[in-house]
Length: 193
Length: 380
Image (cartoon, rainbow over all chains, first blue to last red; front, top):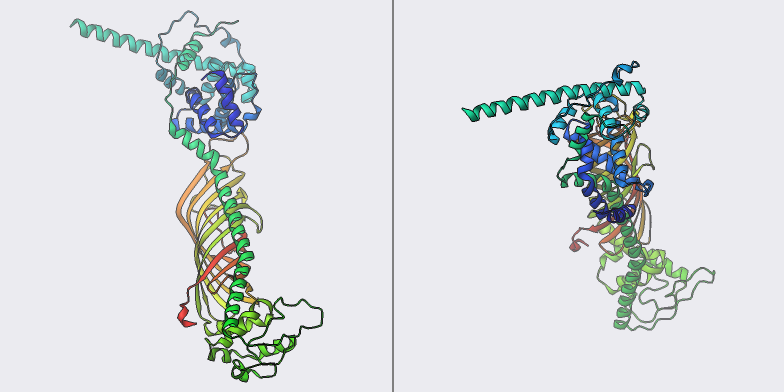
């Protein structure tokens, strides 16, 4: 769907046209559900957030600023809905000593490319607080300042949670690499014998 | 620009590759949620307007049709019985005169008492009648005299001209009613109402169903029925007192939105207050039983409190036998021998807590019904 078609359907949605609503929902479904699944573990919760988000999209579409990408606007709504959904479960430990996390660097590490589902399982293994900050910062491009305001935490707490999330993911990635290496060796051994 | 952390980059690229197949069921769920709340009130609104229009048309044109029939019958009778009658002298009081005033009275003697009337009905020329005399004569015609000759020309010729224009014209009809006091009638009823925690306030809801009425005597009748009711209402959570299905939440909801399907079984007594011409004003009271077929409750939380129980749906869990009092007044209008329509403002007052939340659910509305007299014609 090109931008012109999107704008046409947005105009249709302003008139509560069901066909336009369906067209936009279908077109952005994969993108939207992708965000939802990153933030919550269970697929029914993801569906719930998706439902709630698109209700907001269609009910407040008159507020959409057409000078900005529609996809970004939808993404923000979904992110906010997901955060609201899990806000009660987000238990943040306040951290002020940030220096220890500033220099964490994995810059030279090269990870093998993993499938979408494997990455999703890894992100789901994080606690809600770590997962939310990691999603917001690493994937959705929020700054620590924005995250702090959004979640009602300090900037340092945001950085701390991000650091811990990365550390946990790093472990999981290394484990996955080792498992791949072992299974690769096994396959080679089996091939030789 | 600061380069992205490799872990962030890995996950960003991986998630960008996500290709989640479209789920038609997700759209169905969303669509239902978006359009559900509008559809039912729309149906009720359109239905109510349609019912109001139909009743208005029947009230306006039903009467005219009956008048036309009466005039035709009268004309036919006059052709069969071409008796020259002197014109009736109209009253001089300046009151509104019946439009058939100058037409000849075909049957009744001015001076004769009622028990003699039938002897003179087919006789020759009769003296002129004044308006007062004419009314007096009609008033003196006892139902017993009319019952004695139900098929005589006399009865018809008296009844027809006066039915339309004179209050005393109801006399022959009264006689007919008294011969068949015990009657059955079946009614179809549609009743938009406001359902909520207070009378005369709430969300637009509706009822539709069938009623059966047994007329015990000329002024007293009993009505029972079965109505499918859609109850949409909102209540403060403070008023919501769940019994068997408590709300387990970390936070307390603010309000509860209910969407309930109910089978309403009313039993009412009706007392006629005023009967005039073909209309009857009556009062009605009784009790209703609610069988809760389906109860769906949406719990609304304050902003930013999510993750708690959001909805509860129950099927056939609650029954409230004689749990509501019905109060109403109504106006019934006959459209013919067997058909009548009724407009009946009502209020249902809860005597017990209704539904899972034991809420004091009031319903206030207007019932519109069409009734058909099922009493066999041979009994008349």
